Length: 268
Image 1 (cartoon, rainbow, N blue to C red):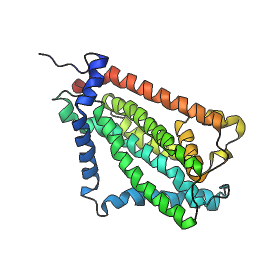
Image 2: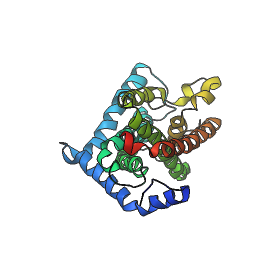
Image 3: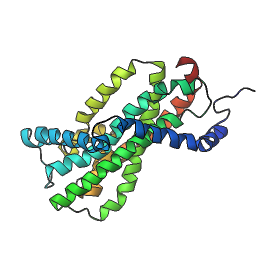
Image 4: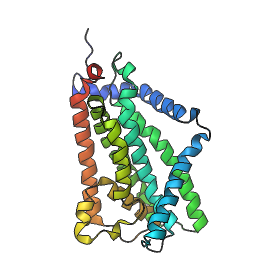
């Protein structure tokens, strides 16, 4: 009997549900491995975004003197760091996920999409830990969210979709082209400065904001600031563009991943 990966689309999505225990196992294993041999353990999920926030606050808030719309600049930056750090970690972890599990992929059949998806879940745990620090910072500054906070789950899902879609792309590309392991860190570093993490996207000239919004993380970050900080300058056309971009990333990511999935065991 020959076992083929996803003999039909219906069978494949059914297999994803059947292998849900493997999904849980991979996610839990990655969480344990990530912090098991570190000195400060889970605190890295707080230290990394906190240090990045301090650097960006100094560069954009102190040196460049960019406006924050009346919001304390550290909160403005950390609010942008929440979705960005989640995306960047998930993007990097997903890229290495298939290669890191090459032994299992070459010997056992299971829907390969489980592997990069579990990496996104692992990164989401870091996001939740950092969200606690965000809440503490807002209490410290006496800055409470308004009714718009009810829209936060939508933007969390938008961030999750961006991380998942790009994770599928980069994980599949990494199997075939190992040079991407050098490109991924550059993309993450470059994306940090071209995305509105250390500054408000309102500084971008109006005639260019629609083009800037093609970066799906622009709409995600702006949405987080709108829901948590109550920013009034949410660029709704740009948000629509970002939503469309996220949907495209997810659909195209699934398409490319499924197209190349059958060759993973041979190439890896």
